[in-house]
Amino acid sequence: MIKKIVNLRFNSDLLELFIIFGFIFMIITIYVPKAIWEEEAQAEKLSRSNIQNVFDVESFYNTLTDTFNTDGLWAITLINAVRDSMIADSTYLEDRVLTLNGKEFAVNIPKGFDVDFDTTFGFPRVRRDTIKDTTHTIVMYLEELGKNDTTFVQHKKLPEFEIMPNFVAMIATEYKERSELINYYDSYQPDSSMLHCPLTHELYKITIADNQSSVRVASPITELYKENRYLIFSFKANNHGYIKDGLRSWD
Image (cartoon, rainbow, N blue to C red; front, side):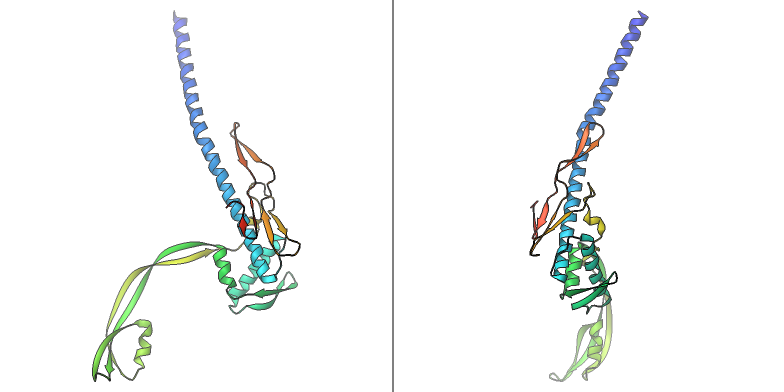
C-alpha cells in the first residue's frame, strides 16, 4: 500500500514536471522566434544602411574626381580629407591638389559640398532651445510730424538707431525668454566599418561600369546565411540587396 502511494506521488510529481517543462517550451517557441525575427530585421536594416553609405561615398568620390573607385576605404579617406579641409578653410573650393599618404591627387570641390556631406552622413534631429530676447524702447524725432515718437527695436539693431541724427534716447529695456524648435543634423564621418557586411564581415561588392558612368554596391551574401540559435532555432538571412545608379533593390 505504501509503495503504491509512493508510486502515485512520483507519477504526480513527474506529471507536474512535464507540465512545467511543457509550459517553458511553449513560452520559448513563442518568444524566441520573435526575438530572432527582430534580430534578422535589425541585421537587414544595418546592412542596407551600410550599402547606402557606401554608395553615397562613391557618389561623393565621383563628384570630386569624376570617377568611381572599387577601393571603398580609399574613397572614404579621400572624401573625409576634403571635408576636413573645408572645415579648416571654408573657401577650399573648385580645383585643388590634395596630398594624401605622400601623394598628390587632383579634386574639384563644388560649392555646397560640405552641406551635402553633412546632411547625407547625418541624422536629422530636433532640439528645443530657450532664446533670450532683449527689446529696447527708444525715442526718435520724426521730422514729418515735428515731434518725438517711441518705437521698439531688438538689441542687435540698437547701434544702428543710436547713430541716426534723429535718435533722442533709450527709455526702457525689456527681457523675454521664448522656446524655439531647432532642426539640425547630427553628422558623422564615414569609416571602414560600413564597408563590411555585419553578418559575414565580407566587403560589400563595388562594381563599376566600364565607361565609369555608374556604380553598383551589393551585399556579399550569395547563399542563405544561417546561424544556430538555442539548438532548435536558426537565424537566417538572404542577400540584403544592392543599389545601382541610386536605385535600391529593396524599394
